[in-house]
Length: 215
Image (cartoon, rainbow, N blue to C red; front, top):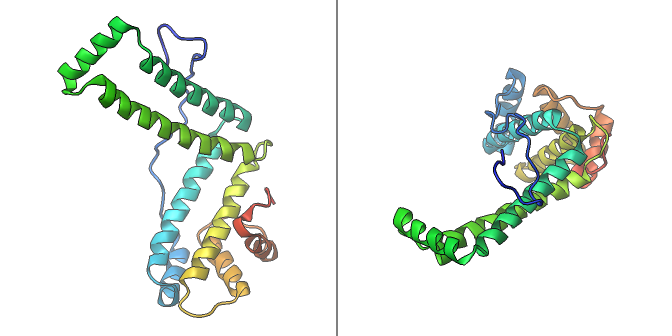
């Protein structure tokens, strides 16, 4: 939580508990494990490891989405974070002379590094990297449907297309798009993922990236 004296550019920040950093659940059902074992001869054992990781990510992001505030509020919070980072960077680069000298001395005594050209340089590099990451998050959030309950279906569509792409690329023999769709449908269903009917799954997979909204 931000406290003390604040510039107007830095609003007071709430501290809700969205349980970020929770343990990722990569466990699969016995049905999915059995299917992956059968598929290993053609698709390789790496498929199982990849699928567990991808299912874990899907569960994690879906839970985060379910717990998230409305998209517009998330956008505002991300933009606030970006402004805070840039404000901190600007202020540290423009400390008044006496404060700058004391900070530089303290940095040398505590860390054995000068503030300018050392600690500040690292902070600015990290700040720019954080800003880039937040910009990516802002771009993704801006693409999401604004109606509640629709965001997680986009993640499901991406899970479908990612799984189909993995099967397409890892198959040891020639495989048709129809077979890929059927295997994707069967594997995700075995893993307990709630899917639409097979025909719609085939349509989702045929549209690269699954960017067809929340069908």
